[in-house]
Amino acid sequence: MKAFLRSDGVQAVLGWLLGIYMRLILKTVRWRHENVDCVEPVLAGPSGAIALFWHGRIPLGLAPTPQWGRKRTKCLISPSADGEFIARALAMSGFGAIRASSAKPGDAAKARQAVGAIREAVAWVKDGGALVVSPDGPRGPNEVIAAGSLQIARRSGQPVFLMGIAANPAWQSRKSWDRVMFAAPFGRGAVVWEGPLEVPADADDALIDTLIADWSDRLSAATRRAEALVGRPAH
Image (cartoon, rainbow, N blue to C red; front, side, top):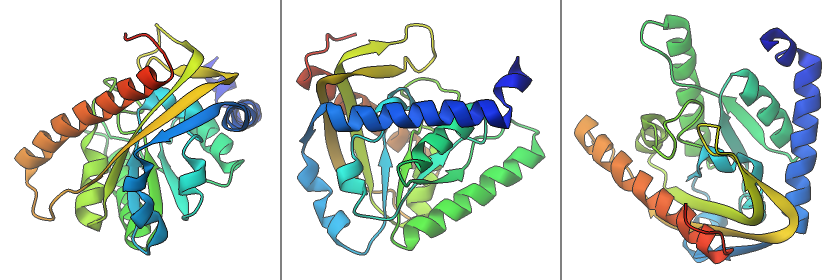
């Protein structure tokens, strides 16, 4: 079954279906943006930027397109089978991909791939591009930022923006680790922005850990705020 799901044909179909769905939701949901002014100076200028939203909101991930569409934008996506069809779906709306994932201890090949992807991402952001990341993916834990996105921010010296995204009505999984959310067409949606945030160039591991805890709390708070704006009950 895994081999079947990873076949190129199946990945192409899944990517097309997700891509059509994401574009439908972008066009039919009434999206509201709160505090979007915080990102406007970056969008209007030459500097790069990094944007974070939770993995479970990937099906809603085109919601900020009117903003990020003004910059060259790529998404940091896992090289897994799930990541493949997500990359194909985003490509349908003009978003490129940098394929990166955390490596398990002892997996030298994946470690080299992860280092190469981080370097590519740093170069992209330094050159003025925008990078969109779901920082708790692809394995979780849910709503806990992994260190990679902060390392990209530290090495590139570019600002980070948080995006809490929600929609209503929507179906939300109780079984997937990320509690993935799929919005219904013609409903309400919200994107709550926060930033800019920065990682000092001399940040050590202790400071990175502190920022991970703080930013994870902030991104979850922005997501809960977005849920409240569209009338979703607290979970």
